[in-house]
Length: 119
Image 1: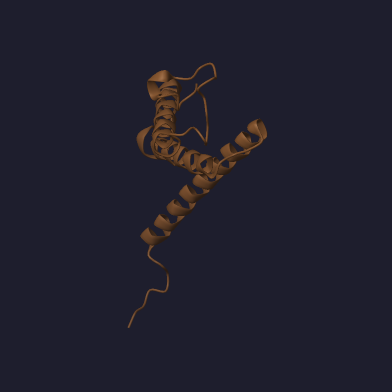
Image 2 (image 1 turned 135 degrees about the horizontal axis):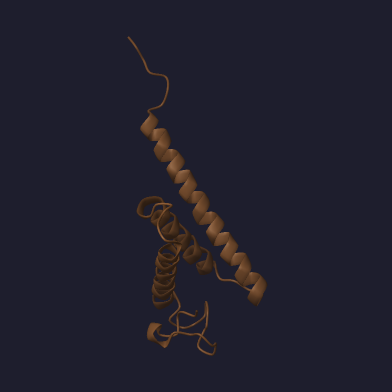
């Protein structure tokens, strides 16, 4: 009987892919969390979650949607739109009382997003 002692190559690829996404999620979340903490002296755990999801979204766009030759302005605009939408979504669901972040008094706040997003 012949047995294959090496794991299936597809499984290893999937595991590497998942580890890389976990790394991107954690790195994005920690980076934004620390930036918030340094800037404001406090940070909410939801900042970590939102930034991690934004990082994953940007990685998915870069990994699956665009090639290196794609115009940089298109990549940046798409990424900014994704992050703005995710911040709005998280804000509407978890920040309706403005306890996590409050942009209402800041310049650059977008009223069309119910003051949940600031440029």
